[in-house]
Image 1 (cartoon, one colour):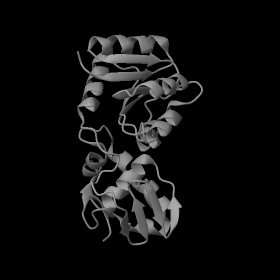
Image 2 (cartoon, rainbow, N blue to C red):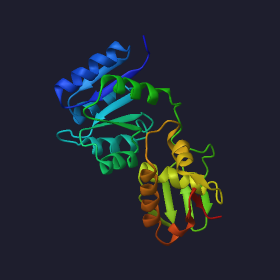
Image 3 (cartoon, one colour):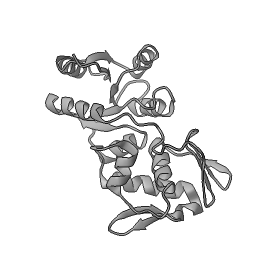
Image 4 (cartoon, rainbow, N blue to C red):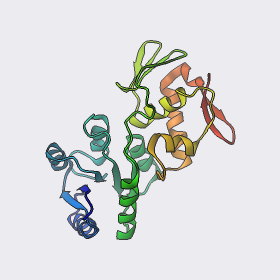
Length: 230
C-alpha cells in the first residue's frame, strides 16, 4: 500500500470515478469531491499529498482555488496537477503562474494520469523559498522578504504571483549569474517540471512590467537565458 493521499476535485462524475478507480488500484488513498467548496471543506480535515484539480468547476473556479491554495501558508506546499479540457497554452501558463506543479489535458489515458501523479510525488518537497537564507535581500532599489513573500520597489510593495516571486528571488539572490530557462524552472519547481520555454518568458515579461524601471535589472542573455544585473 502506498502511503499517499490524493484529493481529486472534479465536477464530472464519470471522470472523477475513472480517476478514483485507477489511482486506488495503484495503491493511493483517494478522496473525490465534485466542487471547490467541497474540496476546501475536506482540506480543513486532511492534508493530502497531492491535489488533482479540474479548472472548469462550478462556483469557485479551479484557477481561483489554485490561487487560494498557493497563497495560503498551510496549503502552499501541496502539489497541484491541473486537469483541463481546453489544452490552450494560455490556460496552462496561467495555472503555472499561480503555482500549479503540472497539468493533464482531457481526454487523457489512465496510464498518463498515473505516470504524472507518480512523477510529481517523486519530487522532493521544497520549502516555499528556494534559498535557505530567510533574511531579506536588499539589491539595487529592491527589498525582497522571502519569509513574507513581499517585494518592495523603492519602498512600495508590488503584487507578484507565486511563481513570479520565486523566479525573481532566485535570480536576484545570484546577481551576475546567467541561468538557462531550464535551470530557472528546476530551481523554482524541481526536476521534471512540465513547462515550456514560453512559460518562463511569460514570467520574465510579467516581472519586468511589475518592477517598473527596476525591470531593467533582469537582463536577457541572447541564446542562453536570463540574469539579474549585479
